[in-house]
Image 1 (cartoon, rainbow, N blue to C red):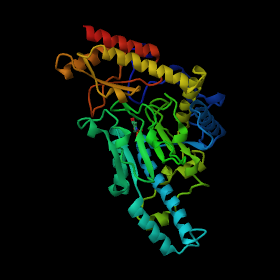
Image 2: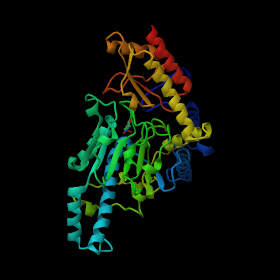
Image 3: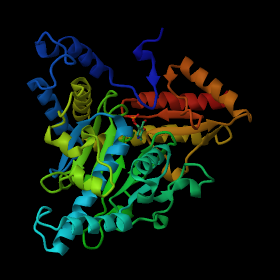
Image 4: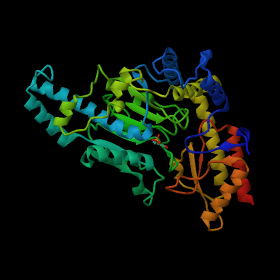
Length: 430
Ligand SMILES: Cc1ncc(COP(=O)(O)O)c(C=O)c1O
């Protein structure tokens, strides 16, 4: 039986957690802060819970340099829940903005004061002719988000601004040039996935075309950073919303974090009333997916898993203690780890084929095929078996694409990445 010390686990999520965090957590599960009660048993309304939430928020903000005009909230429902939540809330915010514009045109001070028929008819016209959600589809997860928005809202409101399969022989693996993206005017949001976990595709940087225009106006950009958060510096001010599940770089499965610009929340922007949305034929979110409800309640609208927030908080504390220069320090290590693994693969082009194009290779999910000998399936089976024998586990690619995937998240130490690189070289040489 292997022990933790013998294993480097490259699974895509849930992912490896630092052993010291798990040791603290096991103690906290039994007896938190000498209270005689475990952290998973304390009330989510207790002061202990509030302190854990507030500290994790503060540490995340410090680590990522999140500006003050952003709110951090903890939600449930995973990344998949956010595919829906982003759509509902950003459509609502679009309607609120449109409503303000129309009220001005109608010369009314408030919704109540306006002629209801006129207001609804003008809004309905705007919805039918202008409401668009732009999706940049560069892999399986952004595709799922796009499809979910079409399912819940109607495909007539979603715009496939780019689909990377069109430039890569029907497969994901590249990011089409920004100049080809078909972005809508004043989209309710432009949505993208910064790192595609299944396909191993990562945006090398924030897309220029989504930055502020010459008047300083920015599009409303929403990003899924589930699998590369905390691994590189993010220009947070370019985003209206960033979300990520905890189970890769932050902690254990069960909480989803949303970093949301306060101008999407009351008092600046309140969601339209359910009655108005119904008149417009637009959907409203279940209350647990309402950002304003969750933010108003400091993430405690309903029972949140405080244990999962505690784990996330411990991981953040460890990162802050390890890297005095915060995310920049971790970014340097993440880049180094990815470099040594890719270099090992590149050294043997007749044995390995790296799946994504070099321009968009993920530092977090390294996807490759072992093509030596022509019988890829059996060579890969041998690769996985031999790797496991060397304590290198979790390397099987996602079931939808096959192959090998090394998820090189923050908790993989540099020595673990080096061990994998050495194994890749040795396997190629035998
Ligand atoms: C980039 C990305 N987005 C979304 C998801 C979906 O997350 P969940 O399984 O928490 O719904 C995943 C899952 O691995 C992911 O990697």
